[in-house]
Length: 278
Ligand SMILES: [Cu+2]
Image (cartoon, rainbow, N blue to C red; front, side, top):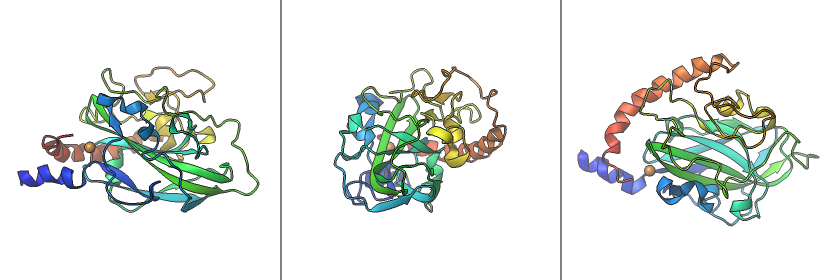
């Protein structure tokens, strides 16, 4: 039994996006972290996109419609996922400018399941773009593992050629926007008290999605603990320690439901962590 626990991570550990198909065009193993706190992983080209060269899009997205994503975690690390778009498909990864459209809290709970549906804003311009899936894994508590996959996509939206003025775009690295590590509570401790560690780290969703329940965007709205200011908000972010100022009262109910699931998962997961080299 112990041998099995040790072997599984080497065979198909960590995790990756499976749908849509990522840039390099295969579904083989590319589950390793793109970096970690130990090697500047929040500032690597690979954290932007695991592969640098754009491919001919194999996925078409309809603005105002929806699409699905799926991911496979061989090691179901605690952590969260999110989804970004960039129209800078031909630019070096360090200068690609992004905006976010979705959050997936505790995304290991959707791993190896049916594809997860997200709504696509109706204001997305027509043209070739890159869909980026990111995952920060928190199982080492202070040291973070960073994962990403990018998929080249074609977005269709007849007559729309530019982003709305309230959508801010920003590079993900150089300088990095995500904290490198959690030395001082920069990331939640998912093995700690569930109710006080259910916040996410990241920039707000773009434009009119920022405070929305759509695609779990409210989780990284201005004023939430892990909010990263990318210049989108008119008022500077405070450094709140609670969400008492959050006008979305139903948030509390949702998070309670979710964290009660994850606290049961944490117990079974903790025993696996000790057997993992990563
Ligand atoms: Cu891992």
